[in-house]
Image 1 (tube, rainbow, N blue to C red):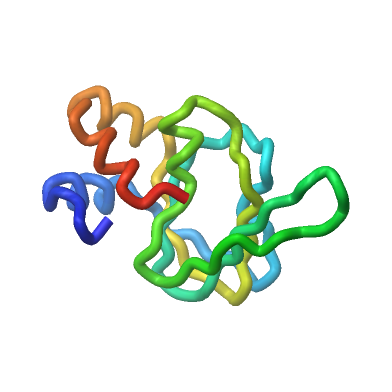
Image 2: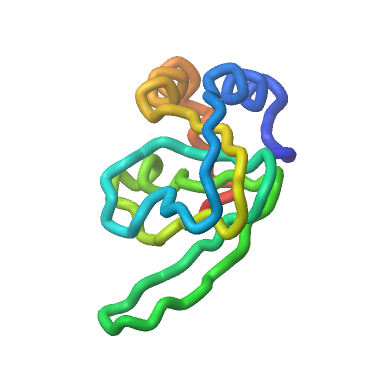
Length: 118
């Protein structure tokens, strides 16, 4: 979100709630219905895709400053990836209800969420 409009960043950070997760904790799984978004304050997150066979494919590693979880909010679909704490992590969680209320007030900010889609 570093490239986002400063007012958007300020509003998002004001809505964020701190959350800690231990290493190996599943933050969410593919097919979960959640729409909260998350920013990483400290630690490393593994983004994985599970296909129909038992193999898991590592898609990406996220680090401090990265945000994730925006796709379900933008597409109104369930989550498509597994997100797991690779190390102990400190997150910022923005509850979807708060975020949706913000986007109703500022519809133009939906594009800001699409900048860093994960």
